[in-house]
Image (cartoon, rainbow, N blue to C red; front, side, top):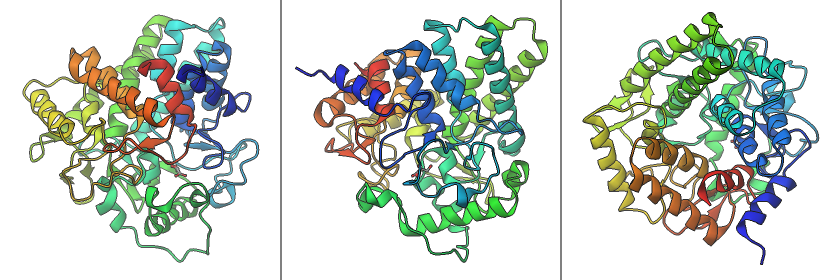
Length: 419
Ligand code: DGY
């Protein structure tokens, strides 16, 4: 019989474009930043050389200012909207003008553990790019009040239509946009995707970036949309710890890089702790314009262990929230609190389960001795794939597979963690 293991391998092969991968055919015919990093973990099970190509191809798209962008338009990408003519970023390989969660350093550390590169010059180049990207986050995205990381477009978070962004999105006054056709709705039912009004705002923010030549330090302070994201903060903090370990191993004499990354860790550690919100007993999103926390729990709230932060007292309260949610849904971890009025079990990041977030929360829990809760997440992830196969996201109540099918990062995480 055809095993799930073989299905996962077949998906990775089908979505392989030689030196980079697509998240899925049809819906996302382009290289995405964090999808690509997660893909590399899966390609190790086929060919470690191919895994390194994936991440090197991703890092090679770094902008002169240090940003590694969220989309790289390579090969045939005509089915994707918005394409290069909307972004107009002027890069040699066309890219979008925003970034995505920095999981790359964490992935590189894991590749280096199991299949180190033979070529130390290539490793040196990778580490230099990672330090520059992380430094870019501090310069262009760190919010001074909290020291946590802000996003200037919901797409930067990778968690596009979170209810956490709603108040920030409401401030975006929809521009006079030329008529456009969404391509996502050719592939996925509208009830599982962001709304038209959200798309109008997504495109309005892009217009602002374009009108300001994608000057990222300016956008960090003046984009019409700005919110402080626990997800971005946790991923950058974890990646910074992994980058420090890589530097200690490969460049123990590089004092400049070591102390830069050490400072990032200290600052982001304070940043994460500043996202603690007593009203809901969790680390939450923060609105830098109104200078207040958003009072809702999302899956990103549970990334604290993964980020390497353990605060006595707070940790127990956070686990209480985790258990409350565990009792509400069949499959952990829903992207948004099922007890909240904005919860929507099928709509993208307003409720569904996403395997890459499960992987990160689960690994963090396991590392911090939360063995039972980690196992609940792993077992639920496995049950979802057994029931519904390798979808983009899943209904946490029924387990129905949603969004794109035969999804690269779902297959990768299955090979790497779930099975
Ligand atoms: C999409 O096209 O929906 C992507 O998530 C944007 O980043």
